[in-house]
Image 1 (cartoon, helix red, strand yellow):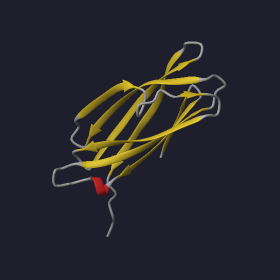
Image 2: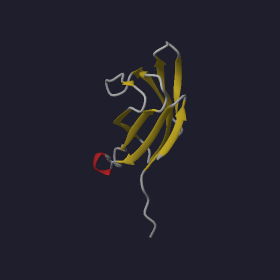
Image 3: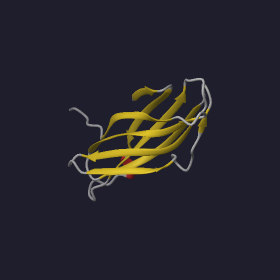
Image 4: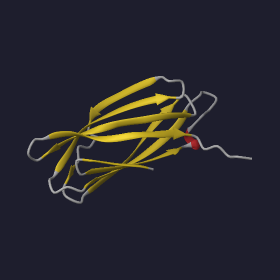
Length: 127
């Protein structure tokens, strides 16, 4: 779990490997990531867009930009939270994601709520 706070926006990321949706023979490794966003400030903010920088285990980079998250551009008042889960397929057993959410305050001020790098990795058992 990774936790970071930018301008009173707290973001927690919980990644997980989905073995039932993965097929190493292809190879495709499916990961989920649960995002929890909380507004700890006094001003209402809206999540306008997202940016993801994804690097797989071979060093290949994919950048994703788009409006909102999972079809939403949520408004968050003081103390409110928004949670969602999304997915990331990779051709390797591990990778790293980071990015930001573009937020806008009621007064028009825009800022990026930073999402620090987090690992997508299959669990290994030690014998």
